[in-house]
Image (cartoon, rainbow, N blue to C red; front, side, top):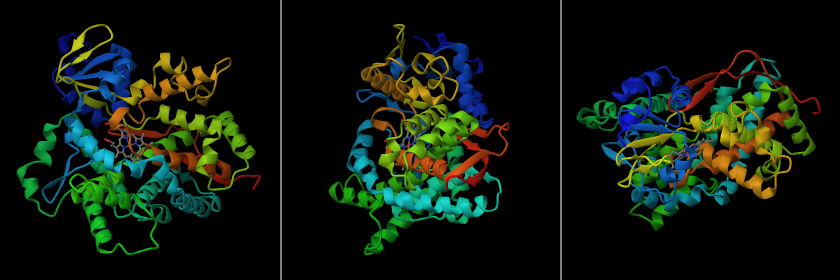
Length: 476
Ligand code: HEM
């Protein structure tokens, strides 16, 4: 089937500049939702790019047996340090290259390992609670939760990865320019991901490579930390961290988990672990506070559970309404604003209507368009309704489990298949522990309930301006 027979915005048929413009406007996810609402499930969004919101093709695009590869959008994320390409999972373009790196280090992110990191997360939750108390509860000043949640997520991911507390929470501001650098890096990836030739002209040109000693700041930092660890690995006081796991994997698989690969793996945690997790934390807090009846129900559940703070992960997971609020927060604000692009293999892609997209076509889905699917999420898909994650009247356990599985898969928040988010257990632990601690400990109230948060939709949909008053809970 010729791509030209697909509907879509007129300009997008000829040029990617059209998408670049929407990236520049920081309304990329909203643009995707609008074009699908206008043109249907399959939209031609660039000269060789199809966007789809059809859950029927998730398996074919992302599943274990899918033969798709990742698009040039991932190539622009490839980074160099001193002229050497740094391997990471996300930028391993070929499936075998990706699998061979992911398998040996998967244990570092498995739930069993993540459980062993719980006490580290506890220490960061305590620090955050102390700072919120000191700076906002006792002073009655307005707190911008969006900043503090990013400080928390960034501190946690740095500490878990390489036993380094950057101290964002303790300082209450950006440290060593890392958040600003992170924003710049993801903006670069957002723009060049839409028009990959820009990356060749800007970062991957000969002059840039001659710029010895320079490189992506996150991988430079990772290399410095690795060097320090290799020089001084005798500190018995230090906690077991993800870097230790990488070093162990390197001993068993020295040809794959090389020093450069470890630099890449550490760097990608720093790049991928804070904007993402904090966006979900922000979403849950914002949407729960917007509806007083939801706030009250969540608080009652937390109070009835008589929890100790910081809340244990296993206890938090046993609270159904809390889990429903978090799942719904993730659905309503699924972080990745771009299409998760794949290139079709030799066999192409047969659409449910029998037509076929040919090999080499880039096809992508965005969790932002998936979240609105009424057949999957119900008629009220556009509203924050945690109840959709709870068993419905007359629903059997089997039906309920199937419905939840379908909603999670179709939501695509962590993507799907062998390239799905490897850090999701870490993110879940951070979220499931912090939300009940915050709501159990404090009385939060939006300072300007009628003023919506601001969302910049480029690579991620990053929220700011969640201004709240924080008071102690009355029962304490
Ligand atoms: C709620 C928080 C998070 C969300 C919504 C999220 C989302 C995603 C998505 C959508 C992808 C898949 C891209 C694709 O299919 O090509 C991904 C991949 C990845 N994420 Fe996350 N992420 C989160 C937290 C984290 C954290 C905390 C870490 C690290 C500690 C992390 C590390 C990674 C890595 C390394 C990959 C690449 C996996 C691979 O290619 O094998 N993420 N994430």
